[in-house]
Image 1 (cartoon, rainbow, N blue to C red):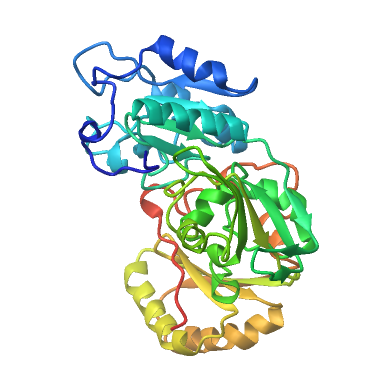
Image 2 (spheres, helix red, strand yellow):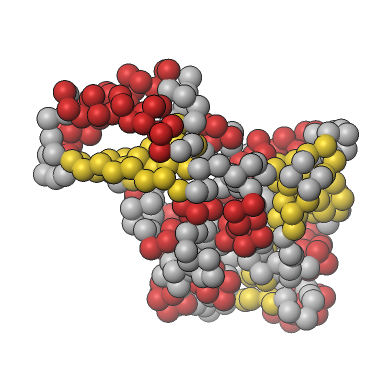
Length: 407
């Protein structure tokens, strides 16, 4: 089956819990549950008691909402139906349509390659749609799907490792790469890379790396290093919907699939269990932060946008910006504080002192590395999503961070 189906009437194409051919609980346990590895689990999310096709046997609030601030504990130990945005329990994350739930019928916590193959073979045998989820950060709800068999990758067994030299099928040699597992979050990768290299990434340590990457992978550093998908060297052991394993997918071995996996959406074309990702020399990162004071920020941020758009065409590629909310703006500079003043700060102060008519505060801070900015002194644990800045960094309706193009 396809990994993602967006038609709201799945029963036209697939077997659903309303279908006569839907396997009973005993069949699920005997033909799928019994094939899973020791630490894998089969979760029965759906229990039909009435004629309503939305009658799910769960209490979402009890299972999910209470743990949302507990970082990786929420992601890796909570129920597989839990999404970071609770509205995504509804189809297309639409809280205004609470009658259409988006909960998979079953979930498999996969731990090994064999678990993934067993789940896909079972889905093929009974024509059941498949969805995939690692952390549940998808704010469109695309990591789960109503009536599907969901592959929950969050605890997939893999140990990240740095390679000083890696050659792809094209014969291209890369000096520094890191192998990343399909269930890894950014914090797992940072734990290995640390300050040794610059790892192009999101700014949330709890985001699933594979899902972020397959969704194009925007970063505050993308104007300089490219998108995350530009930095994938190779995928290893990609599992197709048929259960077939492709040992290596890169620009020469499977060029079309390699292109599709880089930005085509998590789980759309196959299950990514491992990837090789490019690293860069460690460099300083400087953050220039500007916050406008209420109550008239509506008028003032228009002034700032006019300034920003006026300098964008000639802005150095080491400079990128992002909105957080509607009154808070940050500029990220790949370089030192002196570089920041040269590339952006001077123009900003001229605008601030001659054109800006509101009230606001700005500050500038230099970090030894991207790792130092994102992880800092808290190297052992995630205190909460986005390092306790969930609301300001894009949760729910505040998903407003955007890469600003240099063209």
